[in-house]
Image (cartoon, rainbow, N blue to C red; front, side, top):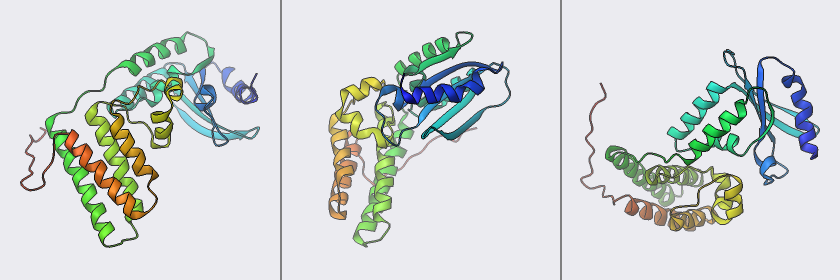
Length: 255
């Protein structure tokens, strides 16, 4: 047995013996074997239904950082739905790829089945008002970046990564793709085995991701600005084009 699993089981002794614990699952990078020296041990502990509390915590044991999540199943389902509304599948992925350690009432089996369905559920396409607003935001982000670049402002580099993050997220939502955390983007794009291990769909638009990676690789300000300009132009053209002159958006006021 892997040393980290022994640590996880030793940590879980205090939980599994409790009547209010229904199930336990190990998940995360340790399970996929795509871990490094900074990886923690991810554990989900499922409480019996009717439990009125939840917990999340971290502790160090045997040199490992253990990150644990304690919730009744209804909260896990709620988290999966909340993720989905944001074009993410974080919790569904954790259960889809996780390994059951303890399952008193087949709770893990049910949650894994629901998580698997959530992983296959397509994200909704956005309405015209959302798309127009997103295009304006991308244009505005790039224009602000241009202002910082032209004035040699110290905030350019920090704002550059804000531009990348928000532009990337908007493009994913527009195209109906999952928003992959940026710290996983390089492996997501370049490594099919990594995608399979984490249940990621393949990129729909490889040209977009190639441009995004060029932005992430850029070292000096001039290259960063040029790559950001190329990325914003590509995204706005894909989303139907954008002209600031005469742009307007009229929408209904919610009742």
